Amino acid sequence: EVQLVQSGAEVKKPGESLKISCKGSGYSFSTYWIGWVRQMPGKGLEWMGIIYPGDSDTRYSPSFQGQVTISADKSINTAYLQWGSLKASDTAMFYCARLSSRGWSSAFDVWGQGTMVTVSS
Amino acid sequence: EIVLTQSPGTLSLSPGERATLSCRASQSVSSSYLAWYQQKIGQAPRLLIYGASSRATGIPDRFSGSGSGTDFTLTISRLEPEDFAVYYCQQYGGSPRTFGQGTKVEIK
Image (cartoon, rainbow over all chains, first blue to last red; front, side):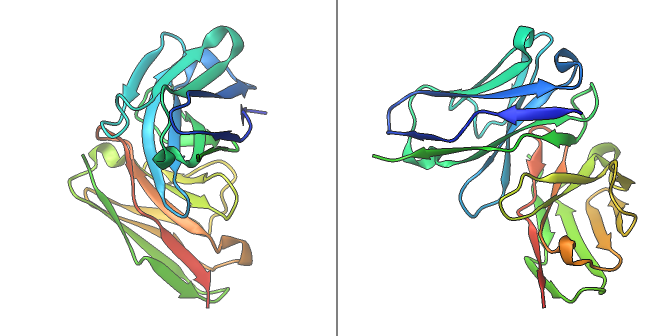
């Protein structure tokens, strides 16, 4: 079964750093793009960026460029989303998802369960 | 950036009725790279339609997608109780990829 399993919920203070993870299984992790999607409380979906684990080619939405870092370790089938200095406005649910084909012009066909990040003093 | 505008914001219907959801793009979506997702409360989104009209694996045939260029439609032919949810369109032909703001289908 193709699966993406994300790390657990996080509660952090403003200014702290954070790295959340997304582990893939049941398919060739290196050869499918993985993306990250933000959903702020009560709001819609926002496309943040994607990474190709095979060579770490990464594309960001301009809205998130410089705000987060997307990375991957293909040796352990895991993608990451990290922040250097969290803000209260980073409070959201974050989903990882796999692109359905090996080109990056495809839809997200498999989704992780989501990681809730709460940033509060 | 391609802006996707979904309408209506909320659709109030009864089980068995037909639902028609619209997604309009601010510029043409190349190669009909348009997807629809369903999201239920407390769950991750689920892919329903890709390529504007192709159903994803395991999606019932009461869900259908149509359209091209800037105007796309998701139709649910007969609403089942489990179909009441929020639906999002997403384009993956332009950069950056973008989502619409969502349409909530609620029980009337």
